[in-house]
Amino acid sequence: MSRKGLKPIIIPQGTTVSINDNVAVVKGNLGTLTVSFPNIINVAIDDNHIKVTRQNDEKQTKMYHGTVASNIANAINGVTIGYTIKLKIVGVGYKAILGGKTLEVHAGYSGSGPRKVQIPNDIKVTVPTPTEIIVFGYNKENVGQFAATVRKIRPPEPYKGKGIMYSDEIIIRKVGKTAEGTKK
Image 1 (cartoon, rainbow, N blue to C red):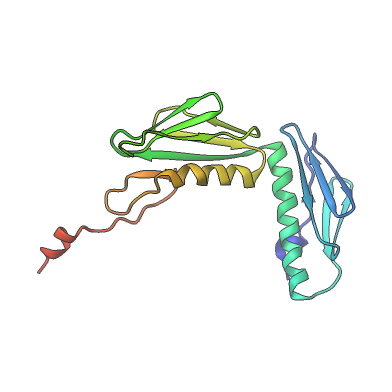
Image 2: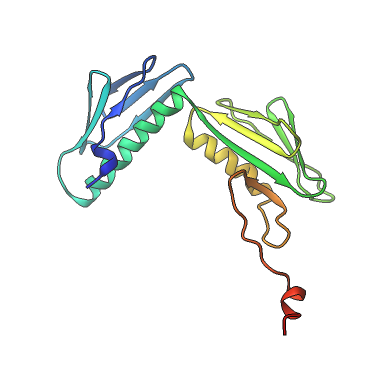
């Protein structure tokens, strides 16, 4: 049983949702998103609520039920509030520079220079300090993918903790070989 799929989704004021041929179109003040869903899932709008139901109780249908409800809720949340991911850069000489629609990341690669990442049109990136990157957008998938792309430039390493990491990420530190070998 999908607990997420059974809850009605509230449509906030200023947001419109229309459903046509297994596609839900969500419009808000930040943008427009579309969510497609299979024929075995029914989506109905009742006043300012969206109800997601399924046609049968097969395992695959139950999985789609919760997924479609979550995707529609994420789309509504995205076009009204938006999504933000904060990244922090740790390391001597590591920094980020924003130049137009390009994010330039200096992450300790000697000889090859900084890594440059093109910023998609639906994402806004700010760099309040050279060691902090804030990614904002209305599409949760695109925001997460862009943040993962930036993090992939220099993932955090477990010995010194250097690299690009999410602001709430906890790096489990490892003890080096010399410190471990002296405990005999």
